[in-house]
Image (cartoon, rainbow over all chains, first blue to last red; front, side):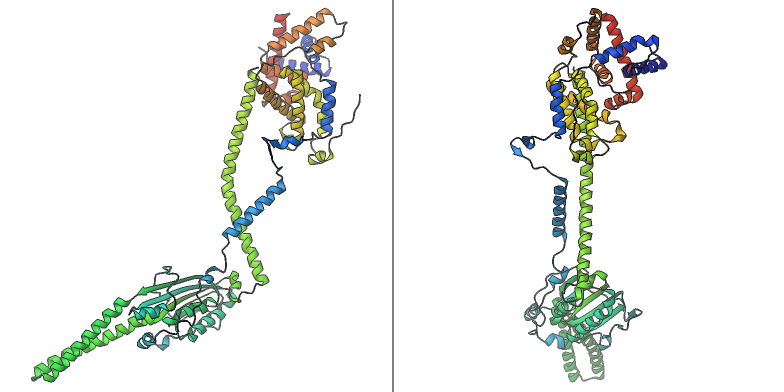
Length: 401
Length: 178
């Protein structure tokens, strides 16, 4: 068994002998062995070395057939080619993921004015139950927020969209079939902060033009605004169409609810009450005693009260059918500049589009990384395992010699 | 004979830290000697040597100085090429005496020197393949212990121990055959 010192000495002696340096006399036989082993070294054939020199000098030219495997000539894939392919993939990804057109604006119907054939009976029968006092203008003077009423409350559930709603001629059809339909809509508009006041004023003007009124409004200059509008039901589509042009449409929802049952029910109760009052009036005319007269008059007062209540109910329910509610939310959005300029493509729009493209590109790349990273890790592990296996097979070949 | 080897300029620019020409010039005969010892076949050794240099030429970008010397990197490639050849052939690669060398031995060699050489070759042939490879790397290819370690994937001290053990076995085998 060699001690570490012996091992070190003998290894050094081997190196010294190979280098031609003197070796301690007791290790002379080891040095002789080293030199003898080196003398056993095989030298290459000069013809071979000349050929190899020549190949090295020419940079190991590839044979033309080298890239032809199994009869298929594979193109040499270069890094630029891979880069171009990746770019094409990214562009295709963007083209697929980018929304087409202008958001929800494409859904805006253009039926303004096409519903003039609607009957006016409903409108006449249903005066606004909030009175004209509710018609208020939002603060357009800028500055602090002005809140005219409580938060607008919509009777329709949000996002329970029925799209597209019946065509503008549908209400008339409903009425022909004695159906009463309550319609409402929600609009979310986005406009640059500096345009909030302008957009708010425009919303009020559109409402006015169409014979509607503002139930409530709340506008915060340069920040946001909320409106609850009522417009004649037959002008709902026209109102939505015009409001959609005020600013960029972020969301548009329309709802419809059949309230024929409520109308019929209240009408029937009113008719019954009127019939009862007529009957009571006839009984009163025929009454002979004071007691009878007093009793009938008392009943008449009750029935008259009921009739008044039913009339109010009927008016209210008919108002729901004849006046549509539009809830408008106005948002400040710096990116929404393109929405209210009539479609002209400005340098600002170009910048926005470029930013959007960059965002989407980053998103696509992020998704690609999210997909490729685990795949790459798995591939790396497989490659490492395959490499280890190949090396083990090589080592086994050596052992088998 | 003196010749000037010119390696394509693009290659030199591509990897300034690796001078392939210098490496080739300094290691060509060493690689051949090592591969010939491992394969025991001159013809196959020439093919594998050429293949190893071609692989090294094409992969010179993958060389990293932090992982070892250029020679160690080159001999790693040569070793893999030789082992691939062994696998392909699936035949014994016993260290064969080279008839050409025997023929080339000077006529004035003493008979005992010839006997010693024959005993040495026989003794080397009796070593296990891995120890024969160590002998080839050290004495035929001229690698130092650090390069040995890098080629075999072991530590330098472990490489020294393995080499010492192989030499001890060789001495014992020579004594037995003497």
